[in-house]
Amino acid sequence: MIFGYSFVPSQIYVSGHDFIAKSVAIPGGCLIFVLCCRKFANDFQAWDASAKTLILSGFGVLLLPFIFGIVVRATVLTAYPLWAAALMGKDTKLEFSVDHVGGPSFRCPNRVDLARMPTMTGTLCGVPDDFRKTLHQGIRVMLTGRGTADGLFAAEIDVVQ
Image (cartoon, rainbow, N blue to C red; front, side, top):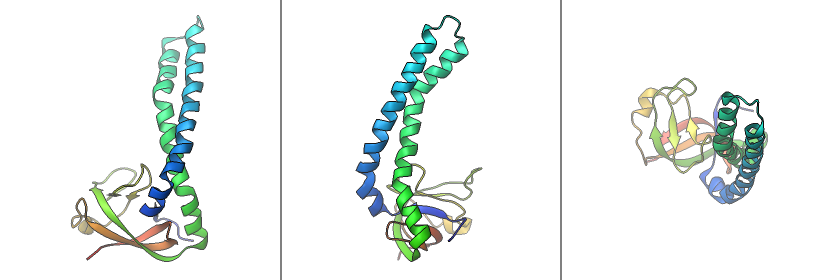
């Protein structure tokens, strides 16, 4: 197994399973919304509730369903291809297009974001700075690493000629 490389699901897998992922994420987000509304209503009815409690409950109502939905969707889209790549993967090449070349950040130095990928799944970290300077939005890149047709652990990146 390969550890330390970014896992990227294939664009074909993501586009083919996005409806299923949204079908799980949307009801899950709605459930979280209902639970947060219930908590907010209980806090609002309590006579001894502080302003801090009401603000935190309101924060939960407004943001937690969206955060939960994003995390669930990303999990549904990456769980199977990640395990398949780790357990049954072979040397694989997959083609992607670049969406954004980001600067250094605390969690992901020398970042490259891939196009048409859901949040939390299409980011490569640790791409050499001199290579990143040759990339721009829309350019096609070939990722090489251990994986399957559904996704791979990207070990190398090259520009498609």
